[in-house]
Every structure is written in C-alpha cells, then in structure tokens.
Length: 347
Length: 258
Image 1: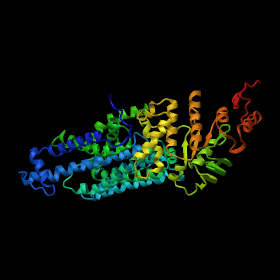
Image 2: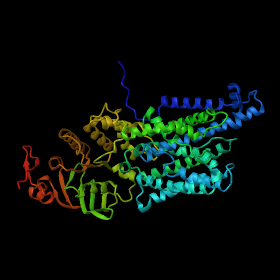
Image 3: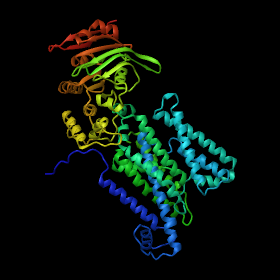
Image 4: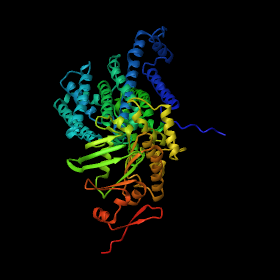
C-alpha cells in the first residue's frame, strides 16, 4: 500500500531546480571550454581554478592562452549568463504583471528607447567603444518606459491595457526617431544594425561589472515579488480584494525589470525572444506558478543565452553571427507555437 | 453590526449609479440585494469591497474603512465575484491559498498554519482530495466552491457574494447557497449578496433590499419585499408569489396575456 502524500502548495522544488542548474552549468562549461583556440579543457579549467581565491594552480597555459581564457572566454560567458538571466526573469515577470503570455521585457518601449540612444551616439560619431554607448542606450530605455508610464496614466486610468497601448505608441515613436537619425547618417547603418541584432563580443570584464549591480538588484526584487505575481493572476480587481495593491506591484515589477533589461540591452544590444521562450519553456516543463517560473527562468535563461552565444560564434567560425539572429532563429518558431496555444486558451 | 453603510454614493465615468443607499448587516445575518438589471447591486458590492471609489459612511466591524489599508480591509471583507478569474493550471490548493494573502507581509510566503487553515476550509467545502487538481479541470459546482474556499480562507467577518449561482444548475445553486447558509450560522458570518433569482433570495436571505435606479426602494423580510405589486412596479413583471409548505416564498413568473 502506498501512502498518499499530503497536499503541498506550489513552490520551488528541488527536482526541477537541480535539472535547470545542471543545464546551466553544462552550458557555462561548454561556453568556456569550446573555442577556436583549441585549448585543452583540463588546462582551461585549471586556469579558471587559479583565479578562485585561496587556490593557486599552474594551468600550463602560455600568457596569451591564459588571457584568451580569463579575458575573453570567461567574461563573455559571464556576460551571456547575466544578460540571459535578466532578460528571461524580466520577461517572465512582464508576462505575470500584464497577464499576457506574449509580453516580453521590451513591451513598454525599452528596446526602442535603447535603440534611439545607441543610434544617436553611433550616428554623431562617438563610436561603439567605451561607456558612452551603453550609457546612452540605458538612458534611452529608461526614458522610453517613463514616457510610456506617464502616457498610459493620462486621465488617471492607468491599467495594464492602457500601459501596453501606450508602450506600442511610444515604441513606434522612438523607432521612427531612430530611423530618422539613422537616415541622416547612412554611413553608420552597419554599426547600428550590428548593435540592434545584439552581440556579446567583449574584451575584459568592463561590461560584466557594469551589468552586475543592476542584474542583482532587478533579480532580487523580481524574485521577492513572485508570490504577488501569482496573486495578480486572478486579475487586478480581485487581487485588490485580496489585499494587494495591484498598481503598486505592477510599478515595482515593471521598474525592477526595466532597470535590469535596460542595463542588459545597454551592454549587449537587442537580443530578441529570450524573455519569451525561456519563461514559457519553464512553464511548459515545470508548471505555471511564478514561484518557480521566475527563479528557474533566471537560471535557465543564463544557460540558454550562453549556448546561443556558443552557436553564434561557432556556426560561421571564425566569423560571428549576431546572437540575436540565433535566439530569433530558435525563438520565432517557438513564439508561433506559444501564440497558437495562447489563441486556444491553453497558456 | 458587521456592516454599516450609510448614504453610499458611487459613479461610473461621472454618471451617478448609487444615490445614497443604506445597508446594515449584522453578524450571522444574510441580506440579499435584488433589483432589475442596472439597479446598482454589483456597484454597491464593489463600493463595500473598496473596488471603486464611493461616498458616504462605510464601517466594517465598527471600524471606518476610510484609512484602512487594502490588506486590513481584505482581513474584514471577502468577495466572491460574479465572474471570478480562475487561472488555468493553478491548483485548487494554490488558488484557495490566495485567500491568506491579507495575512502575509508584502514579500512573505504562507506558513504551515496558513496551509493547514486552507486545508480545513477545503475539507469543509468537500474539496478535500481535489487540492492538487487544476482549476480548469473542475466542474461548475466544484469551481464555485473553490472560489468560496478562497473567500473563506480570508477569515473575514463580512462575505460579499455577487450572483454566486449565476452559472450553476439548480442542484448546484442549492448546494452552494445551502453551504453559505450553514457557514454564516456556524461562524457568525455576515453575508451581503446580489441575487437575480427572487425565489432563492427569498428562501435564503433574512432580509431583502430592493434597489431601483441606484436607490433602495423597499427593504425588509422577504414577506414584505416580495410583493407582486412591488415587483410589477419595479421589474415590469407579472409574477405570482406562492408560499411553499415549509413557509418559504416562491416567486413564479406568469405568462402575460396581451
């Protein structure tokens, strides 16, 4: 006779967590071990271990090879993990707060705002290196969302639907301005385009250091809000009768997700679909409670983007595909599948 | 008195919908709001629940709700909406646990005693054994009991029901209303409900309030309110009010001969 397990509420469970963590660890390992330099995996791992505090080992790599590991591969993998994690958890949070399975972190104009900021910097010839480009992209993204919020709240009727509509209007306007700026300096189109398609090519740790505080802040706030997102699943008015100020939760979640996304976009460009496919993949595999969707999206998104980046730099090696092309290539069919399910009311 | 609502006014887009309605509900009492479509029943419930802005004096448990946070109001007033949103894939237990939200800090999670409390409620509503079932796989009656379970988990003293039987067959209507009736006696719950079905309103509620164009036109026991002439005047309906052998009233529509 088998004992009947006591009913337990949905929460983050060990099994799914272990699977997603294992996936991401494997992706991180693949990210640092595979590359055109043909370094031995053992030596690469020893070189990484040598940088762990209190551990000192000799990897046997030359200075140049050691730099390939520690100044190229590892920061690139870390950046991919941070960007992927932030985009995925922000996408999951946006889907919860707007109760819209097709919401992504760019919904309220982050992408268009960042695009405009970056295009202006590139078009006026300030270049794509240094901190000016990410700063302008970040500023553009935050300004776009602030405009969306103020437009969506006109007349005191700010709800999810008006915010999404305002986001559409603001994104169109910012995109039009970006196109205008781009047309005025056609010689920079290639650079702008390369930024828009997203890239993780990095030398050293600057971008990682830039993104890390935002990624931590955004993830902590979103993870702490995961139960409230489950409450919002019953709609804003019912959530209010359960004692939750829906507008406040929405503002907090949108604020945290926007800061994280804006910082991610600022250092990596516009990487599409991660914010949709990862949370939906987690939902399909492990259930729809935000208590598990958000943390597992954060972890799984990190692994997913590192793998996508591996594809981006391996498929046309020694050339590179923009990573946004790889994520969109996987994401577009998946997006169509989600759309089909959403139309049928299964999501 | 569990609910004291005096001179309640409310408007939608600047058009007044309620014009100074008074409602009082004592602990353990069931008051039903009746009235034709657009009379203001749902609006009154939404005003009491704090879902819309309203004027007038509103006290729950002798405490003015002005200045009460959403959380503290939800500890006193639980709502069963007319068309509750039931997220597909959410389990019955998770859904009922949402009712413990008013007792949790902003970023807190349910404790073992919250889960225990909800399991007791589910047992009481004969939902024991269905805790892990997704909401989209429940029958109409089970789904309505799940919504009731969420409301009861709030441990509020006032229960607002907006057409709780609208989508149920006659058997499930009796089952759900009978359950509310038992619970209000067991727990001293004050119940304020909007009911379209006049027979059900007359059978279950202690008092009826007939609203018309946002005003209370008659109130009192079912014997007083369910009067054929009053109903004809307010609903434009030709009805017979019959007394069943148990003493309850049955409101039966009659075919109008033209």
